Amino acid sequence: GIQVEQSPPDLILQEGANSTLRCNFSDSVNNLQWFHQNPWGQLINLFYIPSGTKQNGRLSATTVATERYSLLYISSSQTTDSGVYFCAVSSSNTGKLIFGQGTTLQVKP
Amino acid sequence: DTEVTQTPKHLVMGMTNKKSLKCEQHMGHRAMYWYKQKAKKPPELMFVYSYEKLSINESVPSRFSPECPNSSLLNLHLHALQPEDSALYLCASSHYTEAFFGQGTRLTVV
Image 1 (spheres, one colour):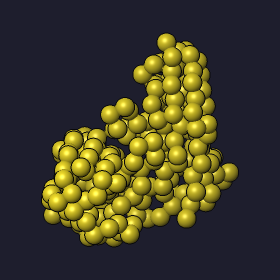
Image 2 (image 1 turned 135 degrees about the vertical axis):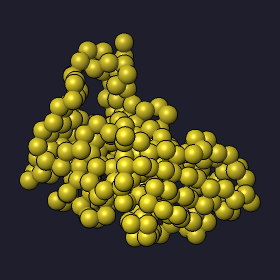
Image 3 (image 1 turned 90 degrees about the horizontal axis):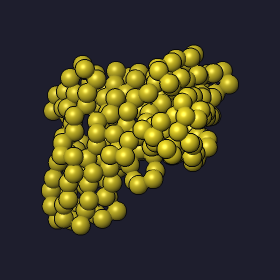
Image 4 (image 1 turned 120 degrees about the vertical axis):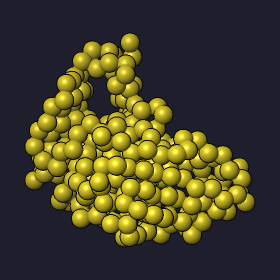
């Protein structure tokens, strides 16, 4: 099956810093999503981005499908950005998502 | 509205109990999913329902029994669980593109 690798596994930032999270996947995908999981367990949709570039406020994402990777950019980080960021992909028509191991982000004030 | 609602938020059950988790969506999505997430791990798929029919069972033990009464509702019936089944259970829905997740049920088996 498809493999999803995220890096780095852990990241500690000072408030106001910028960061880039990476997601590599081993096969063609028809769906790629970035999620932020808050401390209560809720998976919050950040981007649905099987290809191309999108921006939403301080966050942006780019997926280069031909090279099988996606990047999530966080600018001017805030303490509320802390949590686990997951990349998830699907290569089937069922919508079944395969998750990476996640990046745990801690933003210090 | 992109909301998926799960109840209850927390559940403690004994190994001989029978309980059910519930999930509801009103986005008109025709696919619904159950995922299980252990601490410090990513979510893992358990079941997929497509047009109210079970289409994927990821070799889940029979003590977990899914049910899709209609296109908006998804249940997960639990019976004779083990302590290692304690986890966060997440429901999701999609129309085979972007998926939306509920806030999860945190289950503890004692």
